Image (cartoon, rainbow, N blue to C red; front, side):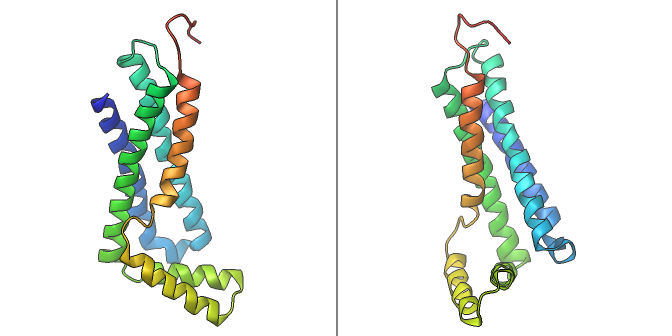
Length: 165
């Protein structure tokens, strides 16, 4: 299980990390909305590795059989590795290469919502607190990976007596 989880987790993490490294420097040129769409699309694409990892485990390690529990375990471990890669990359990018990105994004979100200057100041204060904590991007990635884990474990489960589809 370890080999499958590591391989697919690192591939998934590399996909999301690579796209972040490529896209974030150009967010001013493509716009915030398109950048956000690109970001979430990439997260979904990287989460597809959960499905492929669970399927690979079923076929190569499980001998064609997979329980929901084992499929969930494989999928959630892939998701955790992928999330760690994504969060680690975001920490490096935001703090080393684009230190003002969080403030720009918060200002954009407040301005796009038509909020007051007071709300903008409050959001900047919250962002300052968020920057102090690690893992601020985990909530973006993990729920999508969890959804793919649940779907993959449910779709790919196969007991010994079941016919292959």
